[in-house]
Length: 394
Image (cartoon, rainbow, N blue to C red):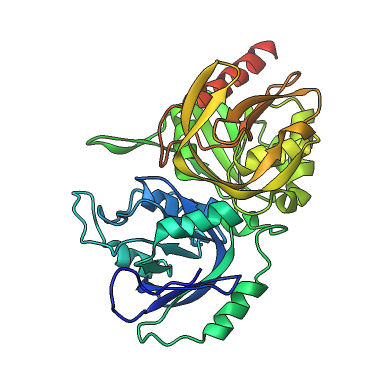
């Protein structure tokens, strides 16, 4: 696919170069320079700042299918990255329309200025419908996003960089997204006219393993009555069990679960064998499946959006969920003592599992609703119920 700027006759100041050699022209925004990554698309209509600060997108260039991105500006509250010493790892952003001036009372900074401050490269004036159709047909491509205000590019070099980038398969990105040292989490969820709250003494001691964890997950754990200790992705089972936790949470994160699993899976196996109630989300779900004997696979286009219907076999209900993943659990590979609890109604892929003989479960999607619907908040109570039962039986 090769296009000129379909939206204006202004000379191109940005390029999106795909690994097949296609060159797409547009107008640059945000930081200047170039970055290489996997190009995915996201169908969410709201929450672009949460998406752009979600560490699970590390190594990816995000194409927004919704045409109006940036209208409400940015602020200092809607940020999901916990490790503020590092950026979210996102490589770039692709937009259909230019960013307008913000029109929202919470806006603190224009999206263009915010992208510059985070060294994120953007391109606008792109036919995102055509790009999305290409990804759906051929799968997620690797590519380079480049922004040069003078419009001068070494196109051959950009093509080479796009073609030679190895892709996300085999990449462990969780170490870079994770916190580097343990810390306590006390913030609760945002309320109208109040902002974020402060958690009181909790009933359950929870260790959250940070593979690229999102803030709102931690807030919902705090809301549910958990005293949360966050440990790095490389934490060992001894590190976790030394905290004497009532439960362990395995977080979302970027990259190939099999690669991160080289060091995470042995730890997860020991936690499961110890009988500690365990809850996983996204990458945590995938690595839990690996620890239980299952397999993961790379998806054709992945799931990225806030409108994905999922069926919960345990309740018989359909929930609309927020998703962001390019790898999935192979349901057919799950052992007999593990049941599939949730399934995507888009493509039938696995979206949840639970052990039949231990207090262990996980989901592929993002129940913290940041961004996205709140249909899945019940899962945090499911986790506390498991911890309550374990404490009662002790």
